[in-house]
Amino acid sequence: MLVLLPPSEGKASSGRGAPVKLESLSLPALNAARAAVLEELVGLCAGDEDKAREVLGLSEGLRGEVAKNAGLRTAGARPAGEIYTGVLYDALALASLDTAAKRRAARSLLVFSGLWGAVRVTDRIPSYRCSMGVKLPGLGALGAFWRTPMAAALPEAAGDGLVLDLRSSAYAAAWKPKGEVAGRTATVRVLHAQVVDGVEKRSVVSHFNKATKGRIVRSLLTEGAAPKDPAELVEALRDLGYTVEAEAPAKAGKAWSLDVVVTEIH
Image (cartoon, rainbow, N blue to C red):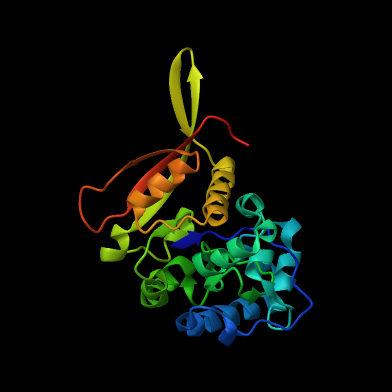
């Protein structure tokens, strides 16, 4: 099983250890693209600060993120699972997993990134600020930039098992599973069900969508669930107590869409 996750905008501070080494990161086929984005991002942020803030979409209050990016080559690195914070990662709570679940997380979780393309949670990276929606002056829109290297690297990473795609739309733009891989891919939407005047109404949630997805991944890792395809994933989630509605795609080579219905959001 390969689980595709979005990163978090907010990140923990960089570590005090050695700086990032691209050659040590997973998916080495992405390293040339990583080096290109890193070079332009560092150069941009080491120059005109106001221009860098504009390109990165940063408010005045986030001005310090520019200086952080300028020092990425020498900043200490930590496991990506410690760098990424936020609602999904709080719910996932990687640090509190038992040893077996942590091993499963290291094998199955892949976090997408505007800077690194995609990394395993055990890959050591510094804290940075560069979303997939950024358009760098030289390389252009990162979502489009990453498509070619991702198309070469991700099918191999996906192997022959289930791909659980929990990315947001900006990060999904960097790689779209195709053909046989798409047929064993499942995306998840979280719906909040409420009874209003005797009628059930459902709405898509945003903030709590992330928390639910984090809890889903944690449940799968903790219980050692190993679904091999979307149909087995549906059964596994139901066994774990989730209300799941799913329908197989009408055509082969299309991803499954799963709705996880919750009555409480927290």
